[in-house]
Image 1 (cartoon, rainbow, N blue to C red):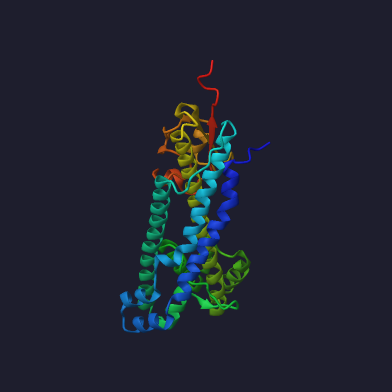
Image 2 (spheres, rainbow, N blue to C red):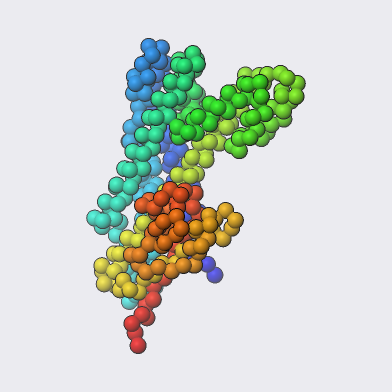
Length: 331
């Protein structure tokens, strides 16, 4: 029977909440953006003014803050429950512990700061591209923040995409409008339901109608945003859960319920062909509490460790198991 607090199960359970929270945060940004002012600033060639009119504010990302706090607390509580099974007294994880609160606050603030910084770069480059192409300022503004959908909310804009992903979308649109639209079929995030139309246009030597291109680009943009949301959700859920696991065990040790020498961590991989070689090599390896795993990509405390290299963490699906030897030292 699987252990009830296996972190791979918690990651799968909580990751969708973080994904929705990220998308809700981006929706908050889109809802307060002033399209008319963005267009007016673009008309004047003032990209900085247009950027200010988008209204990027950390407050908009409060849904993401709350989701990460819930994830962090869930990881700590799960670890505490597991540790308590071998203790005489019940041990509870304290999310208000100063060290735990500091990590949660700094991690959330750092993530939001990174997202906003990248959004500023993306927005600036998207607006500049619109000016360079001579696009209508209002069209550029709507392409950025999205258009009002049937649900009354803005959707389909560039907001939420990384600077690189926004470039993917622009390049995809250019490929569809080019003399060689077949190049667009190389993109993995495309909606394959449109492939026949692309092949037909290429075979007939005709252009793809602009309204069809718009639909294809919107679908591609939406898929890119979902991909971004899923990447953030997976990595941040993993990091929050494992950091909470780490801090819960520290609290247990500090409370005197567990001796540090009793605690070991075991690396568990996803056991499929997508696992990177360095993590396949780590699978099943054991390390004492406080000692990082040593992978060929560098030291790493746990899957998703924010202190580890990007090559060691991006899209990782591993998890770390806690092993407590309650009989250690007893003769």
